[in-house]
Image (cartoon, rainbow, N blue to C red; front, top):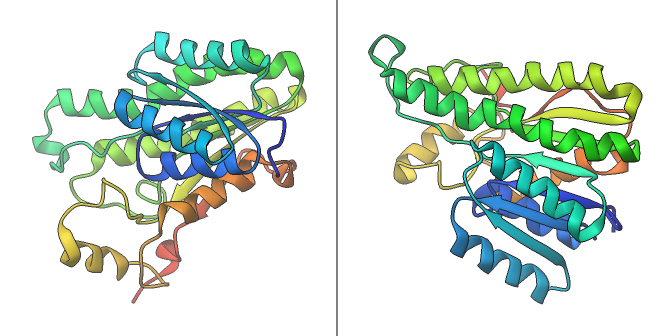
Length: 250
């Protein structure tokens, strides 16, 4: 029970990595506050966590909204009086369009969803963590924009690279307050974002040294490490959990 007595926010919790992390955190004893746009999926997940003996509540809404981020933090405080962990995981890929042909609306939407939302979330989460003198902020970045550039993913790469910079600055600004900030960089993962069928999955798997893609639970395990006290001397890191994608050349 590595998170016993702790309260955690998880965004993008209705599916994929966020859903797996919510279940994992709850199984390790955390009270989880779940955010995503899809209310029905969140309600189902809360029921599953409670049925398994865990504690969970949900707040449906758009992560781009300052009000949604403030609501998640306030619910955590209302329910438990504390906020120990924030896994700011929500994100989108956007349209696969070359930068020279990309509509500005796509650029703005991806940046707002993946990067600006993390800024807004941090502003809502930091006060509670600062008051108690501890906390772990985790942001889901990507190997894309860090070790690899992929065509058609300019907005996505820029937003995910930005999360690494955000985590580094937060780590420096908040270290003396006992608050850690880290970026988690998954490789290809079997989620709803992985579209294109078996051929696409095989092609993506081939980019990794392990020649497969990750299960969401494997990325959730890495997030658990960053959330727990086992990583209490880890801050400002860009933690690759990419199956060797970044070093594979064949």
